[in-house]
Image 1 (cartoon, rainbow, N blue to C red):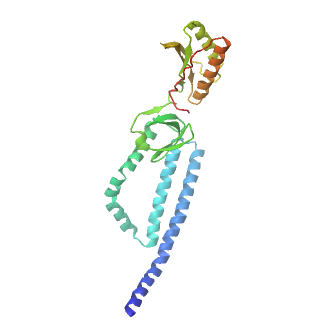
Image 2 (image 1 turned 60 degrees about the horizontal axis):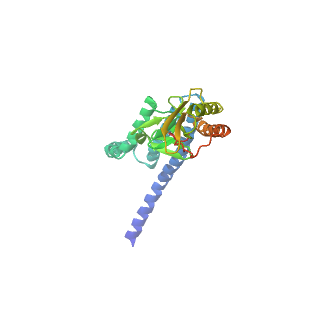
Image 3 (image 1 turned 90 degrees about the vertical axis):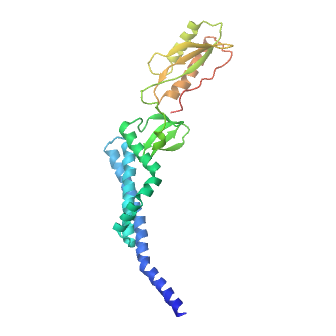
Length: 271
């Protein structure tokens, strides 16, 4: 009985001796993470006010926040009583194993750096990457954040983003809008072309580039005409829909009856 009491007393004394240290470590973690997050937000705001490159701001903000949290963990370990040198030696000893386990993550980091250096896309660009079409919202340390046309937030690891074909729909400053119009065989192409050309002039967001209006193919019941005006990546869909509207209105006004409608297949996702 005395032996059990002695053991219980030893355990209790051990708990009492470590409790303040563990509580202090937890407190350091809670307060430190709060301060790290707050410092990250303040740092990000200061970068915005400095008018730094929008691509670098989320990248640097997340990097600083990660480093601060790592320092908080080291501090908490010291408060608990773990020797920092021993902790660092432990980290160094586990470095190879951790590096192997995080090889993919480190690859995403390296890809993020390459994106910022070579700029295949930047914040605000309309892109098509790995089958995802949308606007780049952020380029973070490990991920690229894309907002799609249907208001989905896609978080794509940078390594995956750079591992395939990346299409930047904003890079050239304009996009071709592909539309198809069905013309009855008995109608004159030059007449229809003139009607379509005038109709496109009523599309306010269309770029001044000369649109292509040409016969594409001869279908079973009608002639297919390719109509290709130009728009910016911001006005693509406005031009796409407005062109259909104005062309239909103009053909109806001219008494042109199209027997079978042809559905156009847009080449890009919504911007």
